[in-house]
Length: 142
Image (cartoon, rainbow, N blue to C red; front, top):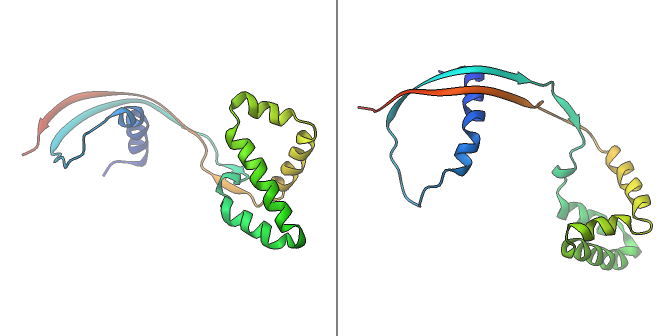
């Protein structure tokens, strides 16, 4: 069994190559003995705390907001449709212009206050791998 640091070194090294590799649809049998030589280093940063805004399920969160909006529900729905449509249709420069629109910076301050109040999560620190992988030999397995 390979050690964790060897598995991580190999995975990081071949990650880009694997993303570029393309196979047509089909079943491929793989049976090959590969001998590799690895040399390099792995640097693992400490775990970090973050606000998991990307983990928030958007549709259920909006549904809860509208359920609790009471008398403002219909007005809130109309505003959400308007601003979401605007944001979806905006290209990058238009998005920047939207952010500069009067009152948006103030509203972003409120959004930051909301996200700051959310529970934090911990994620694994970045892993930097600098490794040279040399294929020493390959042969079809018997």
